[in-house]
Amino acid sequence: MSHYDTIIIGAGMSGLAAGIRLAYYDQRVCILERHTTIGGLNSFYRLDGRNYDVGLHAVTNFTSKGARKGPLARLLRQLRFSWDDFCLSPQIGSTIAFPGISLRFNNNFEFLRSEVHRNFPGEKDNFARLAETVVEYDDLDERVARCSARTIVSDIIQDPLLVDMLFCPLMFYGSARENDMDFAQFSIMFRSIFMEGLARPWAGVRVILKNLVRRFKQLGGELRLRAGVQRMEVERDRVSRIILDDGTLIEGDRVLSSAGWFETMRMCADDRPSQPQAPEAGPGQLSFVESVSVLDSEPRELGCDRTIVFYNDSSNFHWRKPDELVDVRSGVICCPNNFAYDQPLGDGLVRITALANFDRWKHLPATAYQAAKRACNQKMVESAVRFIADFRPHIVATDTFTPTTIRRFTGHENGAVYGTPEKRWSGTTHLKNLFICGTDQGFVGIIGAMFSGIAMANRHLLMQRQDDRDAKP
Amino acid sequence: MTPVEIKAVILDILEGIAPDEDLSDLKDDVPLREQLELDSMDFLDIVMELRKRYRVQIPEDDYVQLATMNSTVNYLSPMMKDLEKA
Image 1 (cartoon, rainbow over the protein chains, first blue to last red):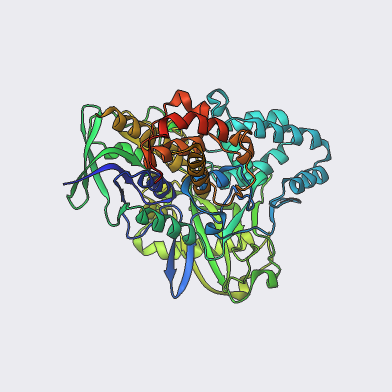
Image 2 (cartoon, chains in turn blue, yellow):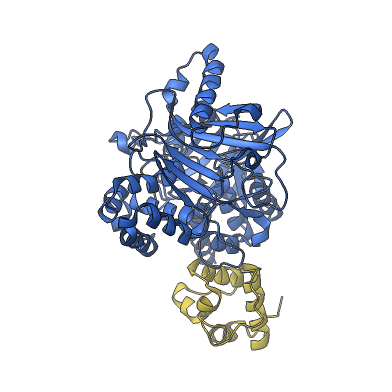
């Protein structure tokens, strides 16, 4: 039977980053990935000769080369990457578009500040106060961490329209909770999107993933694909060994799971009651449909010149699981072409993301699924062209993925992209040698996910591990 | 190892942690935290690197000794004087 110092479940951003940290400090590490490819929530695929990205549209937390502060700089140091390795090109400019009013923003926070002043002159001082509160917020302040962000922000900003407009991008890019988010999450997201910024590698997220895997393997780490965990055997208060879907047994001193909180708990073969007490504490409910349109031209030539448009057509912004297959009242439109690359992207692309109902998709008869996908795609594009130039005559190919696609590729219950609303910031579980990282630990986004893997590896698997070793004669 | 060699080791570690930094004008008596914006994760790395390379063990209470280049070299000198440079 194979034996490792640490077994990591899931070869997404967080698992790979954790793996690099541990392998670098000479641990025997194995990453288990159920799928045939890496990436988890942030991955890529090829269809009809074209490359498609899945997952987040952009890397948030972008800071320029030479910046020493912020999560990106910190994680580059931790993983021993140089800034250039991630090949990040900054966004051109994005918009939050609500009925009759728009706020533009880019990677310079002062620009958003001026947009707020122009559109909401009465909120000038309040917005400055909000920015200060967010900057001063300390990630480790558990007291404020779980407070309702809606409550705190609405105490500072008077105009509910501005509150909704600020929440819209942050929720789309990381809120697992309906209608609200924890203030911790709000602050992290506000900084990562508005104060730091958005970027993307020319060749997509795969560049980052491939760098991570290459480094992990160079350091002697082992990656097993098609290696889903069937269950973890528990002896007293520890995971004793792991049984894979094909029956293979492996042992590890410690286990770090990026599979999600409930998903991980279900793998534990002990008789711990796994049913959550309240639905709010249960698995996440928020999933998405994403539509990808391939165009015959650069979107900019057609008048689509924004990097990302977060739109909402209603008097209020609704962030909850819709009753229907997809809720097209609001959404995110991303043109991956509109980042400041050195060379054009090739294909013109428009990606649209909207809230969706997992159960409705799951219960569709197989015969109706394809038609539903096409119909939703069309509805989403129709909705989107109210907020950007009409690109429909230029579509040469489309693809759509649904909550059930997300469920299949990520293993997340309900296709909940951002996992459970109740984050486990500590990363600990009821078992002494089992820890979690990734979405359900609390950090979202591409940089956030890697940061989560690093932080949990440092705290639970590296310092501790060294202490154990030192304790041995 | 002489203090000069120990300093070279620390510089090599810092270069690994922050490959984009120019370390040539690093001041020996100014806190590294200030000059390089190092945080607790980075100090953990300095400790881990010393352990990995030279099996030098630094208890958590002594991390404060790594504040500046001078204090680091002073602190490490007695522990590393009998070691050969790797």
